[in-house]
Amino acid sequence: MQDLTQEILELIRLAATDLPPDVELALRNALEQEQPGSAARGALETILKNVEISRQNSTPICQDTGTPIFYVRHPEGWSTRKLRQQIEAATVEATQRAFLRPNSVDSLSGVNSGDNLGGDHFPSMHFEEVEGDALTIDLMLKGGGCENVGAQYSLPNSALGAGRDLAGVRKVVLDAVHQAQGQGCAPGILGVAIGGDRGSGYLASKEALFQKMADANPNPELAALEERLTDEANQLGIGPMGFGGKTTVLGTKITTLNRLPASYYVTISYMCWAYRRRRMTWHNGAVDYR
Image (tube, rainbow, N blue to C red; front, side, top):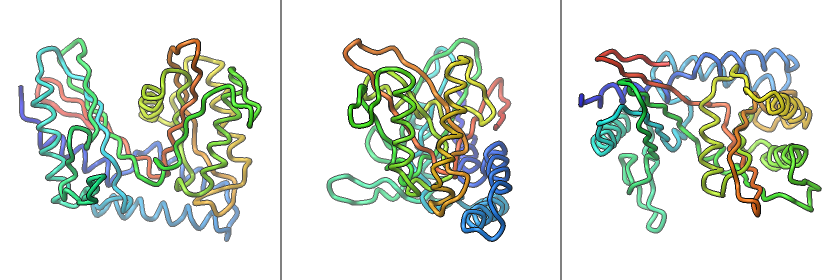
């Protein structure tokens, strides 16, 4: 198999320094909803200026370059061990070139590894063998601030009056947004997983965030709930960076998982405005980034 270390390095650079066009468009649309001279509009203007400068200079969009989360879909016969080694090598070089800030800290000693590597789970990597001969790598850089305000609820929840149905899902998701206030670096994007267990729920809620802003949920009931949650979250008045305003959430993405009858989890992964995700596809020697 080919050494794709430099191609993966470029994937990291793009994710860290060049906000995806659909996210930037959503932020610009949000800007037009805020009142001139308001703190909310000022925050969005600063965010968008930062996006432009970061792209021009190939510098990180945010000082917290986040946990690198890689989803790798590879052809039959490819070595996941070698792919892991290439991803790790690209991560180290990206850190040396300051596309990534050294973020990997030993949980007991507090010592920073200095190269964004740490054990088997930093960076976070997920591998899946697929049909065909194309390799696809999706990368998300998940900042600590927005990760801190993620939440998981077990339904029913008597405190919120939330039952085991979509009405209950709606209540707990809006509660998570309310509890986050501005600490998740709003305006945010919500990845929601209904069902699963505690571990699979968090994994699936992050996978939902790889969707494009304009992607429509194929389930009409969930599509309607996504739209309603976004609208109602924006009525909470939290606004960009918690300064008040009309834009608290840019979008909501919902996925579902089978569950045990005894459990009904709703898991919310909150992504900040620095919605850093990119995809690399390699096929027959040609590479494409989106």
